[in-house]
Image 1: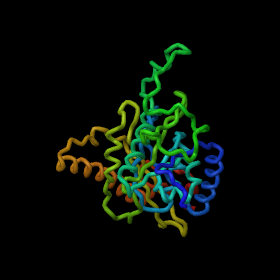
Image 2: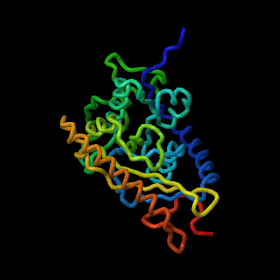
Image 3: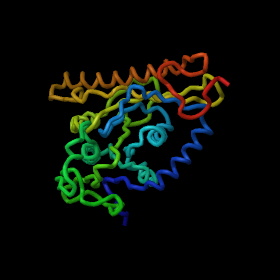
Image 4: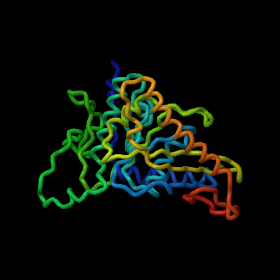
Length: 299
C-alpha cells in the first residue's frame, strides 16, 4: 500500500542547520565564482515583511537568496519549491522552504494562502509605536492567520487542518520579518526569454497587507568576461506599488497590469546584464554594485 503523502509540506524552523548549510554555501560560491556583486542601493531598511520577485535562469537561483539574506538582509528567509522536488530533497525544509503543487490549482492556492498569511502576520508597519507603547502583559489578539503552535512543536508531516488551511506558526513581535523569495516564472527559462508571471503571484500580491508587507524585484546575471570562473551579479530594485496588482475582473485591463509588472522585472534584468559588462578602472562594475564575495579588482 502506498504511503500517504501530504498535499502541503511546510517548512521546519532549524537555525542550526541553516547556519551550517550557509557555511557550506559560502564554500561553494568561493570555489565556483570569481566574485559575487550586489546592488541593493534601491532598498530601504524596513520592518515590513518582503516578497522578493526575480528571474529564474540558473541552478544557482536556489542558493543566492540564502547568501544575500545571511550576509545582508538578516530576515527569516522562506521560499517555495515544487512539491515533488521537496519530497526528493527534504533537507530544504530546514532552510525555510515549503511546497507548492502547480499541477493542482486547489493545492497551489493553499500554498499561496499560507504565503500570504506568513507575510501579513510577520511584518510590522513602519511606525510600530502602538505595539511598543502598550503596557507589559497587555493582550494582543492573535491574527486569524496564525496558529497556536510553535515551529518547534509542529508535526513535520502535518497536513492541512479540517478546514484545509495550513497556517503559519505564531511568532514573537520582536522576531525579524519574513523575506519570501519567489520566482514568478515558475520554472527555469533561458535568460533571453520574455518574463511572464504565473497567475498565483498576482493572487498572492492582492492578498498582502500594504501596511505590513512590500514587494521588491531582483535580477540575477552571471558571465565569464574576465576569468575562467564566472562573476555573479544581483541587483535589487525599488519596492513595487501593491496597487499595481489590483485585478478588477476586466480581462484586458488585468492582463495589461500583469504585463506592466513583467516589464519592470525584464528592465531590471536587462539593466543588470548591461551594467555588469561595463567596468570602472578599479575593476568594479558600473552602477551601484558592491563586492559581496571574491576579488575586488582586475588582479
